[in-house]
Length: 155
Image 1 (cartoon, rainbow, N blue to C red):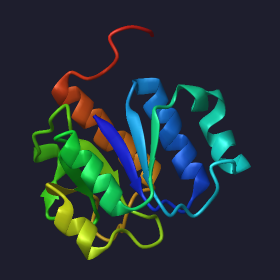
Image 2 (image 1 turned 180 degrees about the horizontal axis):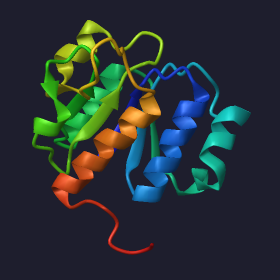
Image 3 (image 1 turned 90 degrees about the horizontal axis):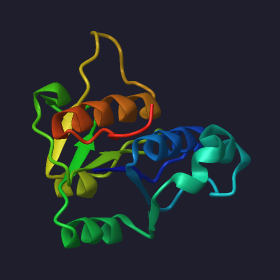
């Protein structure tokens, strides 16, 4: 199981997701271009001292990311506020890569077409979306619950 961010543009969200992933033993893929430098103080502050524990991979493009997923036989599961299917009704696999779009503009049609599944987190009427870090935590929690992927040691 991995989390992936498509062209993220808010460093604090990326830092929070890196911290989440480091705490749960999940890797993170960053699909460039990024809207910030990996040395950004806001990214580091949100990730705290967990940065060194994050299994981080950077991809120069979506094509490079998609190729890496194919090589690992990993299904790309896209989360989008425009998707019809709920993540609560989906059967996750341990090899899934949970992909989240750019905060300001989501993903391109090519990214959507390459996904093996497209899911949404149901919200009340009139609510547009969740913060990407909150959505990633919810999605990852459900995926790990289904696949018994939570850490077996620690607190």
